[in-house]
Every structure is written in C-alpha cells, then in structure tokens.
Image (cartoon, rainbow, N blue to C red; front, side, top):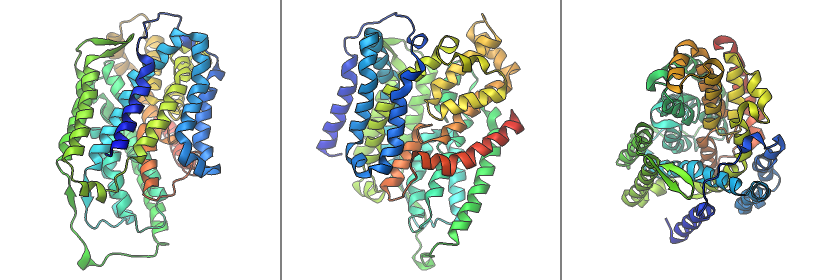
Length: 474
C-alpha cells in the first residue's frame, strides 16, 4: 500500500468517527415513530445517482463519485440534525460505529486476504468449467460466507474467461449464486442468518433451507449452462494448445490461515459475551471490538507476508474497495430513516405493511423486496421480532423462539430465504454484489448499470424464479 493510500484510509476513518466523539446518551422518543416516509428521499437520491450518473456522465462519475456520496449524506444529515439535534447525532454515530465500520472492515480484510491468493494454471472458461466454479462457490458460501467465497473466486473466474467476448452473464450469475443464494445453509453464510443465530435460532436450523437452496441453485445453474453454451458457440475460439497448458496451482496458500482467522473472528463475536464499552454514548460490545481488531490484524498480516508478484498476478488494486467504502458510507447515512421507520413497526410510516403481512408467502416477499434495497440484516430482524410479537406476545424471547422454530417453520424459512435470496435482486442488496461488480469492471468487464442489471437479469430471471418458489414452498 502506498503512503498516499495509507494517509487516505486514515483520513477517511477519522472523518467518520469524529462526529461520534463527545456524544452523550439520549433517550428521546424513537425517531422511527416520527419520521415521514418522504424522509427516505435522499436514500432514493443516492440510489438513482449510482444507477444513472455512470450512464449519463461516466467521466464525471469516475472522478467525483465520492463527492456525490457526500452530497446526499449532507442533504439528509443537515436537516436531520437541525430538527432532531442530539438524537440525530446519536443515530448517525450509531450507524457508523455499530454498522458501517465493522461492515467495511470485514469487506476490507476479505478483499485483502483473498487478493493474496492466486489460483494459476490453465483454466479455460467453458460452460462446464464455469458451472463447476459457480457450484463450488455456492457450496463454499455457506461455510466461509458469501463475501469470503466471492472474494476468493471472482478473480479466478475472471481470468478463466478473459479470452471470451461474452462474459457479463457469468458475473451476473456469480452474484446470484455465490454472493447470495449459496450463503443460506449456515449462520456464517449471510448476516441475516447470523442475527437469527444470535437471537436463539439453533446453528444448524438453517439446514432446513436446503430444499429451497437446492431448488433455486439447480434451476439457476441449468439456465446459466444454457445461456453460456449459447454464447460460447459465438466466441472466436482461442484455446491454449495442450502442450502449453499449466497445471492448477495456488500461490499464497498461507492466506487461507488469515481467511479462516477472519471467519473465526466473526464466529467468536457471536458466541461469547464480554460486556460493553461506551464509545461517546454508543455502546459497542467488547467481543465486536476484538473481532474488528482481529480483522485488521489478518489484513495487515496478509499484506506483509504476501509477495508483490502474487498481487500483480491477481491484478490487485485498491480501487474496488475504495469505491465501496465511499458509496456505502453515503448509503449507510441516508438509509437511517428507512431503517428507523421499519424498526418502528406498527408505529411507523410503514405500519400498513407490517400489519398486512401474515402468511409465509407474504413474509417471503415483504422481507425479500425490502432486502433488495435495504440492509437485509435489520430487515430480517425487524420481521423476526414482528413474528415473535404477533404469534407469541408477552412470552420471553428465548421461549418464543423455541416455539417459533417448531410451530412456525414455514414463516421462519420464508423470512430467511427472502432476506438471503432476494439480496441478489440489486447491486446493493448484499455487500459482495457491489464489490464483485467493481472488481469485474476493474478487470475490463462492461457490467450493466443499476437498472440494466435489474431489467435485463434479476427481474426476468430471479423474480420469475421467486414467483415459482412461492407456489412450490410458501
């Protein structure tokens, strides 16, 4: 990492935490009860900016996307702080300390560690080879997380298809299967399931989602194979002669130690209780601070111990993670009213939605569609708590969860599948989606824009699949 980038990261970090210093605890009325639905307009603004500006003004976006993120953050934050004062400052500090910093540290550490693993050798991107990579990634995602599996395999699949003209669809199905649907079998796979585990859902309960995961994965792999076979026939074949083929070999194998260290740190943070620390009025748990420190340690250790040659062979650069860091800083700030209204449940501006959801199919679509645009973890938790309150009122959480996983399996499955699967509907539905898009574009793949991804791929393929799954499972 160059000195300039180190300074940039330090400045970015301190610019984020400075507003949090000196804030006291505030016990004002829950703002989600007060905020109108139109308060989410800045969030809609940043999403539309991500969708439209790269298409209309690509050079402006390339040079100024951090300023666009800052602009929309200020459009929301200034009136928010003016009207709600200390409560608003506390909410902004909370989402930065509790959500954004851990989010970006996890992405950064996985990006760095997996960027130090180079899978080399002749691996030609045929439909069969690509399908096998997607299958392996979908299986791995449940055990090393969707982000871990995505960062590990995105560069190998890009290299194996570098000779091909038609490869956008391969990256799109990579997002479908590895960044999202594959992470549904364990709490390590995706944050919503990890939240369920923290609230009493048994670790291996998520294996109940195996039928839905297999159904969706098999259909998507079959559709992908047909698509890829069709495009493959159009390619100008440039196969490497057999005598020049290299055996598959992995450089930077020691980085798997750091990868498992990251997974262990995440699992540790959810398995132990070591108390809390007051950070300027925001209470962060000790185990989460230890986790974040371990993530930083794993990333630094990888950078120190990985040869520059490996990073060079991986076409490693800091551009994708910086783009994600800047844009998601704006997304996390402007998403505050949407999450607050959702958390307010029947007392918020979305009370009509919360009250109308009752059947498993309704939970599947309500959680899924919100998870397509909002953070799927708090969306899952909101509807999880809503179910506990609706079906088992005035019963302690531990007892209510025990009843839920026995008597309401279809309902719990519905919110789990909706939160994990429908994160693939947009680039911002799940953290690795945007990261994979950025890495692919850095490698020269002309990825579709925000709406292009939806209208050309996710709506005609995923939404149709989810409609079929509604009738089959819910």
